Length: 257
Length: 344
Image (cartoon, rainbow over all chains, first blue to last red):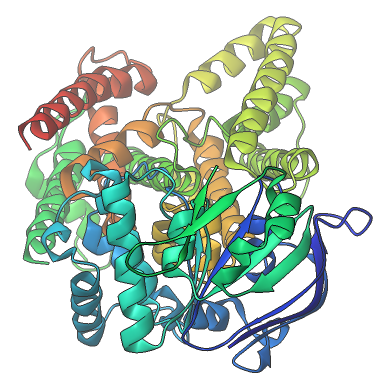
């Protein structure tokens, strides 16, 4: 699904932020990107999405190099849900979600939202349990509600790959779990591939199938959640000693500090 | 959608009736019937020569171009303000805050002060140099922004605009201070902003720029909507942010430049009208843009009507009127909006 090959990127050629990153995420799996602050996790997403100009190496999505995609084509394949962004205008949630249809409106400057688009966003609202928020003003919603609306917008792009950059950053544990369960559901039912930058190691362990550890712009380790049990790797990534125990129900490693 | 149709009809009726009232009123009383005859004659609808030549001159050569010019100027400033506010996600932005108006003013002041007359441009030296000034100042803002911030951040553009404004403001004041007495008056008069003493030539000058820039901006309503989420989020939806932003900025600069060129610096319209429109119909640029255009034009026609009739036969500067009318309305709508939010 997503294959990153010897990828180097940054704001200038002399000082690349990411160096020689290679990894692969199979279709329909949930990959968590972990690492200390400034390790290049967000840059990875920005780079793959074409926001950084000085890149070398290749990124393949569904077997095709992203460099051959136009911006709109890329947006039809990949959605990105970032940390909460301030929105100043009084848009309704529906208007926000309709923005997700933008990549499908090319071809004519007169192309506008069609009836089929409305049907599609009906489903997106349902997927994220946000139907009741549809006509509310976006800025009047709570943090958790906003992220659900933005997720509905991400789904409206009909992506096969979803990038998440610390989606639960400002959310309490209830809303974080809610959001991640929603994502897990989409992954399992509809084969959505998810790559998420997460801060909470325990949540990552519970929801991810694959872990990628980054440090100083380099990929340090790539593997299944059992990697958490590897003390040497953890010490190197986070610079502190971690202890783990299996989760009482799922058996996934849980982290203690 | 129904809601919007009725809003559009209201706006349309209001603009037509405001223009009609503006034509009817002035220091000389002319009957409705005569006005129709005069306009009909000029449009070759009715061939007879009923209107007297004085009335004919007042309506056709003075009032009509003035009213139309006020409409185009108001529409330009409001649309430009709406687009810029959307682009920067910043309610304080208007053509003046990014330095476009200053650039236009500087161009005009240089022409007035140095009494330049470029041969092939004739009387239109002043407006055309103003438009050049506004576009040049825009590109200067973009250039400074680009080299000082790689990510092309919005805050940087506004800061750059402020810097440019201060600098050009100082230049203009310097030029005025050293000016001869008669050009001094001329510059001051022009700086205060006015649509009086204008003719069809001025209308003809603003229209081509107006039409092109309006088309460009109206077709970018979707991009303006996506930019509300932030530049990065807009990029992720597939918007070519830098390119679209350059289109919208340039069109806004042309609108402002052309407006400032023919009317001087009339403030307040670009800030208040888009706000007012958003408070009434929401933030979707599909409606905000055309609405701002119509409401802004109507507003300035109305403001000009008051400016020339309230102290008749003398006139107020139109900027005074726009602020007098605009500020209380804006305040009222803002308070009402806040109260409504509390109820939810």
